[in-house]
Image (cartoon, rainbow, N blue to C red; front, side, top):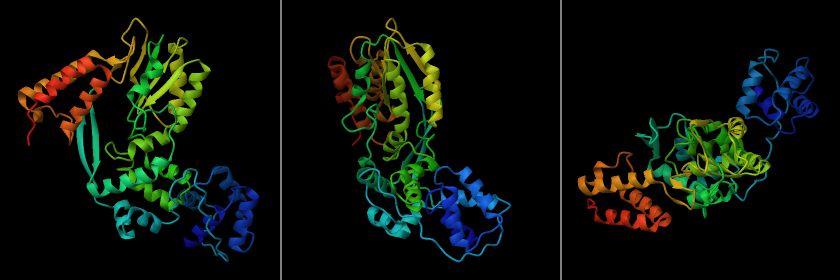
Length: 386
């Protein structure tokens, strides 16, 4: 088994061309073998880009032409860490990851092992649109590590100009600004945005950032839960934006080709313009599916000027304003908090419910000062437990 792994490492130690793979394999095995050239042909045909070592090992082991026993005469050095694409910390080995996070290698193994205990508090909360959503909040120690990764690593990776959610200097207001008073407005939602981004995709992203496989796997394990991005981890929004970069590039190009505007706020996609019709939606959906996401057709809306045009709770027909259902719902929550106590209204289990409501009221005041002042008066009258 070790000899097979050494052979795989030699094949991956340089360009994946037939001739160069053959030279490296012969240098490793010491002689030509009858099975080698056909195997290299199959290997190069299978992997046009460098795969993970484990994936290449599984391919080799499944090939019945490869002898179960191999002898190697030379062990080629592993390929060096690629140059970083962005100004991220250099982490060539797991010991460097541990030092970067100010923990021991043993602690790093404990946090990233598949058999590790759960480092998350899990809670099912109802969605506003129906159904349930799993909220997985990391426990304090893991959350502290994720905040380091976010501040020192992910913050150095640029986001697309069309992305406005969880981006410094951008907000709901910058998200809707290109779509004011639109001749037509298309809103499309991505289903299960965070859960649809799985561990292999996150690990591949860290390898793209220039980290070797072991480091990329460790960073991905620190940022995922049960094999996907958890809704509740501080690193999830930044990773989701980074992994949606190609999606944003392609949808921006599609919109420009049709003379339309495009922006995205987390899982909400918005297009607007005079040329927008229902025939545009299949082109958007095709790109979304090709980029590994799933359109939520149930939440898709094409809104014309005669209708209430709204995005993320704001109406856009004349100027950004609080949508009436959003205002009424927040007012009802605040009124019930005042009458029955805040604990009776925290249906989604927010750990900092007071701050959550305060943020929603501040948002309302920024959009509509008059309505926001009335909501603020209700909030100020609530008696909060000490």
